Length: 519
Image 1 (tube, rainbow, N blue to C red):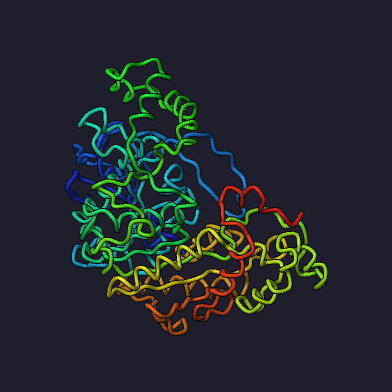
Image 2 (cartoon, rainbow, N blue to C red):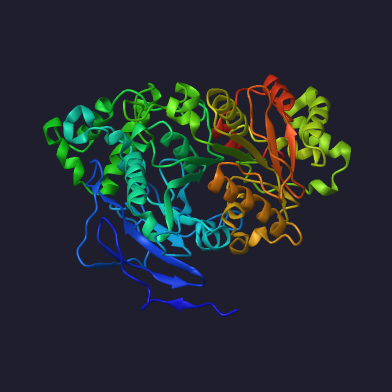
């Protein structure tokens, strides 16, 4: 069927910020680069206003990064790169109707990249067209300030810098407010909003549950590979006095000249920060780069507990089998003899190899024994902990999943960080490595259907999946997303208990450095 483009007859919308003109293509109205706020460096976001009709046909700037990205691993996670600027508070909208009375569910995407990198359009899979058309929802994706632009506390140096340590999160709250006030123009229901994100974006979903200013601006949350504990990403506490004083000194400025930090070229600020922050970090001092625990942001739920208001927000929480197992395979696991597989596993588990193989086979029947080496220790356990905390603290539904698909790459590579995103967005056709005949289309409908059901009702159950019960205080059902989807109860508790009794505590940086242990 021919794809249709329209522009001239697409109506101008009167938003609270000004008039807006988008376009229509292949069944979706698309609005790109909408400024939801404006902020000078280290300042809180202010309401965005413009004169005349703003053409929303180009993506807006993305936040500057602290280091140059080098394209790599594009088969695993295909990326898009885009012009950068500090004034990056913009969002994109995909909708299949501009009927103000349509009241369609709204889903708001928060991108990954930790708190320091990424953008709303960084990955090919982030495009919202298929989701809005296939799911009957209004899709929004958000850019906000990152790294030292979004998370550098200057509050000891003046009231104008209050909460600058959470500027990036304040941007997200401003985006939620703009959506709440305007999304009905795009066919959306401001009273049925789901925020969802992966990796750092998943962390942001949990963070918003801990911010009172976001209360009522969203009603459900999907956290994808985005729950970490304090050993992976410690909370930012304290204040920025020592760090900012060191920055000023490195830049040849006095504390009376702190405002000059607002205009120093970004690369120069990054250079100074990179030089002075390691010694402060080594002492356990504040170096920013993540949200600051204070009266505004109440801290990670696993460290500080859930706010009462977060208890009644339905959540889906999940991770993928391999998460950070990006390293190329050094062997063809399908051709290994049992003895050869044991020899490889023995390099990690030594005398415990046989009991580990047996425990793994019980937890993941049908997987190859060497897949044991890539079992995620970064996200799955904290995700289970957050699910238990949420389920035990409120009446809202808590749904847990594990994405365990193998892909036709390097001898059936197990699912890695970001590999589930195309399935949630209904975008497997945009990601080449997802081309698995007889598998991808079916699994995509199952995963996408679960997310759309959740966005509409707070419950991911639908006819294409087995019954998926919520987590409770005494049971932990997990939906396994794979070639055959099934629900399993507390299936990997014993496996993790055994792993943790043998291996040292998990450290993400060490894991990334040694993930090719099979060599």
